[in-house]
Image (cartoon, rainbow, N blue to C red; front, side):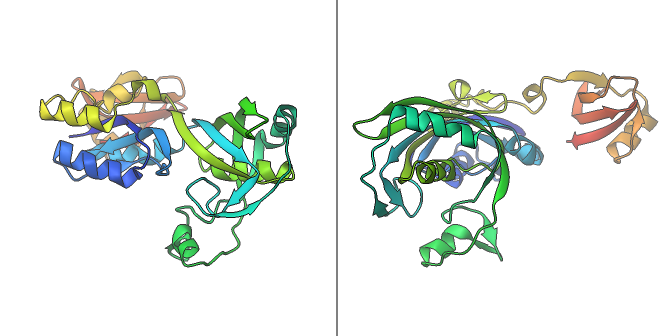
Length: 286
């Protein structure tokens, strides 16, 4: 089976927990996710099946939308509520204080990943080092926060909610930690929901329970074919010589505007291609 699934991941599940569940539901092994979503987080987790695993890096690179809950006044070692509180502050800030500092984090910024993250350093995950009590210096990375809005903030409880549109590699936990620093206090994340990954929205997602029930009835309509996952114009390759060249990774003549296309032969979907200056080359061939 080849295709993609828009999963509405529940809280408490790792991305690999979701894959393990789906392997049982679908009785297949070749399944991959498109970017880790922390156990604390819920929402869109796009899963790739079979040959669609070639698309994992494409989907992972798409812009993502999050709704994040945060608490001011306390700092944790994981930057979220699942960690240990390691410092506190009595400073109280206002709605306007929080709203005004957000401009410092919009656009292209530098961000340091948290120690409790899946990034590898010298072959070892950062969170593995953190669990051993080892803290190492992390290099800052360029990320883009295209939209950042304060949805609500309670000045009595010092709790709030953010709307974030961000690029690949952005850590919302780090964003909230840095907000606390900017406000001269501490901050940590206590809830996160990913509502969108590219064109995949949480309203269209399937829960684990829904997929289990559907799978028991041999209803696999929660799987979207690779072909139906891309709203590209179609291109038919009819010449056998051109087809062979295309499948072997060569470019072929195609008088179409520069863009990406769904490629067919004898009305059968064979992959995705890209036209640049009247030459078509396979982008992802299945």
